Length: 111
Image 1 (cartoon, rainbow, N blue to C red):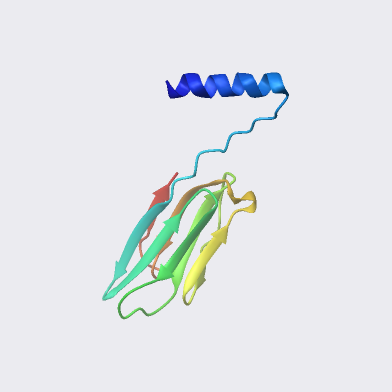
Image 2: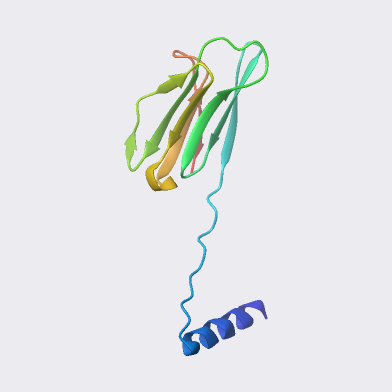
């Protein structure tokens, strides 16, 4: 029934000469937690932004992040509090890796 109503509305608008646009589906957001000792780092990633943030506990060192964007893998970026990457146009991130120190293993979010 909803589909019929939607089709009827589109047809009516088309006859009336009204432009119709649809809103693209929201990109999903992936979340990972990375623990090191008594500290938890939080990683989030969508198609447009990714970050790794120091969280709870006795956190020493930096938050680390790298992304695969537009087909290329970035270098690791890091920050004492939050490492962040914002993709131009808020789209194109397909993978993000999050870690809690330079030599630590990482957790991955795939889109």
